Length: 322
Image 1 (cartoon, one colour):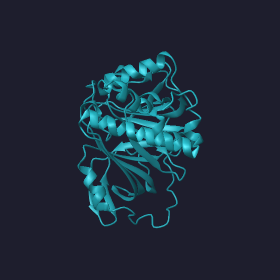
Image 2 (cartoon, rainbow, N blue to C red; image 1 turned 135 degrees about the vertical axis):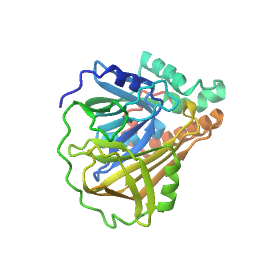
Image 3 (cartoon, one colour; image 1 turned 120 degrees about the horizontal axis):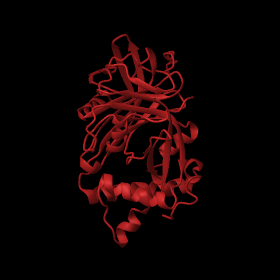
């Protein structure tokens, strides 16, 4: 695969300035799990890499990456960020995970405060947030393909940097009761009120494809979706992830609802049936939000240690104690 040697200035501005992005990771069954992340502007244009950081106490992403390092990051919103470029950028590539050391750890702390606002300090806060802020790894995605929609509209064919797009993927074998909702459609539909809605599937080469959803309407069997018509979405049935999210400045008041399910694409008709759901809501108050994040990270990390989860602990040997 060819690695893009770089990208245009417009793309660089988006990668540096977006406050939130969406990560897509493939599942063992051929689907995609989507989650909202912040990349803190981590990128290297000369090396063709884009990164993000995650706490070891919230290690589900790391477990998935250990099973399959293919990943995609979609930069789809300028909301509360610094970039004003209209483009839509999807970075696809292979991820590696490393513990930050020395100056990189200090740089992450600086970026953390720059993008999400300064955190409180003191004996309580420094200990409470240690796992959330300090026991972290950096995930670096080396781009093999970048899809760029300069105008921000996925109705148009994207510019492709790097490896050409594969032929359309064949339909997948449906699981048992693929078209039967396993989670209430009405509850999923409530999440469509959130500002950003995305759909994720795998391409024929296994790379996640993430596209914005323009509209969704509920039916007894699922959601009827309207997806931009650039022709990238393969036809037939397949596993697909769905994410709705929204956030306020400095990522406060984050609301996210991530689902897995079954997508049936017949021409212009798209019906997605929900199977699972993982929702997250954080308060707009900074201290309350940090209390919750600190608690979740501490509990997650201690659970990983207790259960001896290799996928997390192999990165934790040099991390600060919790």
